Figure 1 (cartoon, rainbow, N blue to C red):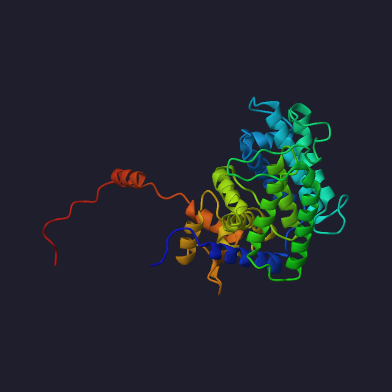
Figure 2 (spheres, one colour; figure 1 turned 180 degrees about the vertical axis):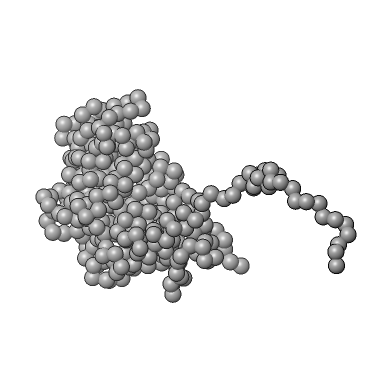
Amino acid sequence: MVSRGRPSRAIVYERLNKALAELNQRYGGIPNPQEAQLIWDDIWYQEAHHSTALEGNTLVLREVQVLLEQGRAVGAKPLKEYNEVRGYADAARWVYGQALEPGDWHDGSLLAMAEVRQIHQTAMTPVWDVAPHPDATHREGPGSFREHDIHPFSAGMTPPQWPLVPARMQQWVQNVCTTGIRINAGEDLGCPLPEELARLHNEFERVHPFIDGNGRAGRLVLNLVLVRLGYPPVIIFKRQRDTYLTAMQRADAGDNGALGELIARAMHDNLNRFIVPNVAGPARLVPLIALADKEFTLAALRQAAQRGRLEAVQGPDGIWRSSRKALETYRGTKNQRRPNLLSSVQTLEKQPSSPPVSAACDL
């Protein structure tokens, strides 16, 4: 019997691999912020909103956009929440630029310890200015490792004692760099790429190197690594919070599958939602999923393509592709005003009647 639920994990990984190959072969890979500022701005708003919302921030997306675009705080929320978003956004913008055009804090490897500290410092300084952690000493501010032990989490995971943090973090950074070397060399990682990324992300959170802001810093560091490797960044949506936390708990126990799948889906979604539609020209063929929007779902576009209403082609891989130009043509025909049947009937009723026909016919 054929399953009709969500695609299996293996299919998710396969689709991601094909999409990444297409990005590199057809579109030249991930564009840098100078080449495609609008792409990164779209991701920037979404990531700043959702990543802080995972930690309890209550600003809605529109409030985030006004704050970041205009510098205005709307919505009457606590100052700390605005500063959480502002700090995260500043750190995310630094991450995108640093990943693609490395400057200071970079030693030529995939990741440097100084970059990890800089990310945390940038994200947390605005928060610290108005609401520093109540237990922090002057040596535990933004960018500095904790000097407190962390109580066990509710799921049972206990971070290492604080004197062990510097060595554990140094080892973690080295593991990230080693993984990057193996990926670039095309070596077999022993597991799907998303699950290796999940393992690294989970290990960072298990060390919990800072007294506060570890979740935000961990997701930002993950995106620095992803973009530097040529992959799209990840956004974990606030509606996925429970799924994310459950996946992290399973990873704590050594099962990276669920977290790897979540990361893979997020990479694939961002690739098709933000990157491919913008790097491809209006006449360039892209997968239908990259054209889907609020008006036309993927299923609706596929149906239109299959029926010949949307100009599209199906490749040997079974994926339907079309262009933004073709979609706009289809949108125009779809939205053409249909005749009002009631008006047509009323018009007919107003026309003069034809002369009555005689019952007898002349032969």
